[in-house]
Amino acid sequence: MRVLGIDPGYAIVGWGVLDYTGNRFAPVAYGAILTDKDTPFEQRLAEIYTGMNEVCTKYRPQALSIEKLYYQHNQTTVIGVAEARGVILLSAAQAGVPIFEYTPMQVKQAVTGYGKAVKKQIQEMTRILLHLDAVPKPDDTADALALAIAHCHCSRSRIAGTPPR
Image (cartoon, rainbow, N blue to C red; front, side):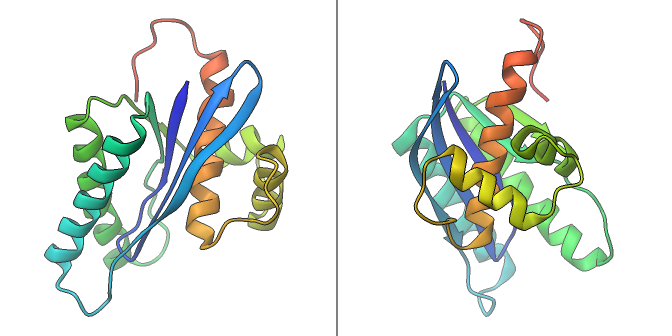
C-alpha cells in the first residue's frame, strides 16, 4: 500500500509518501510545499493545489492520511488552515485518492504507543521506524510521515469495507 501523509497548513504543507508491505515501511519521498507570507492568500492556495497535484501525479498514492482539524487558540489561523486543507482534500479527491483523517492523539498512539507523546518523541520514533539518519525537516514533513505511519498501523485494524473518513 502506498500512503501519502499530509500535515496541512498554508505556509508549509508537509508531505510524505510511504510504501507499506507486511509490517515494513519504505519511505518513497517526502518534502514540503512552501508558500511565501507576502503572496496573496488566494495565490498561496493555488500554489498548494498545484503542489498537491504534482505529488499525487508523481507518486500515485492509494490513500491520503491527514490530520483532523481542531480549533485551539487562534481563530484566524484555523480558518486559513481549514481553507488550505480544503484545497488539499479537493486535489486528493480529483486524483481519486481515498482520504482518511486522524486526530493528533490517534497519530501519537499509532506511532509511539502513547497518546500523550510529545512532538520530539513522535519525530524520533518516525525516524527510527523509517530507518532515516535524521528527523526530516521542516517539522511539518516529519509530522506528515507520522500521519502516513499512523494510517498504515490503523488500516490493519480497520474492518474490511469501512468507508474512508
